[in-house]
Length: 163
Ligand code: HEC
Image (tube, rainbow, N blue to C red; front, top):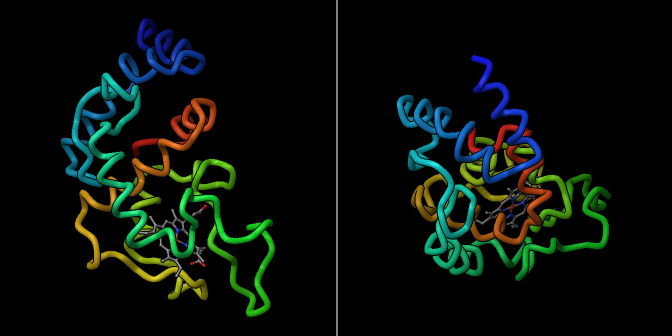
């Protein structure tokens, strides 16, 4: 137990270690449960994150076709202050580039937002559950997460990350 814990602590400051040593068992568990459909395995060797370079480039197309009209071409959001409600009481499309709070949500929640949208909750985002395939949704997430700084990404891992 002790060595594992030590690795975990170390991982909080050293992202690569965190992935290789601490996250691998979590991945194995996830794969076992068939949750969210994330490929099991340690961080991608090129990106150092859960996604591959191929997913990022596939995601660029998905995002441009389905998400950019609201969230902006570079996921910068639609307004100066995404926290301020619109006249109808709903919230504007927030930035997804790491500057708003998408990094508070683990992957399963990001997927759920994309699947269900926000209209049912009084928001404006349409549901994509049956519009996009699972790998397209994951690719879109990979694309906007690739805009995040390492700091944002580490914080995301600590807030639940790939769970
Ligand atoms: C019609 C405009 C619109 C489109 C198209 C759209 N969104 Fe959204 N999105 C929103 C709005 C508005 C919100 C805030 C919640 C709400 O009102 O539904 C939101 C919220 C989100 C959130 C939650 C962010 C957070 O910080 O909590 C994510 C993630 C997201 N969208 C991803 C996507 C992705 C990926 C696509 C493309 C597949 C997409 N959205 C397409 C308008 C849109």
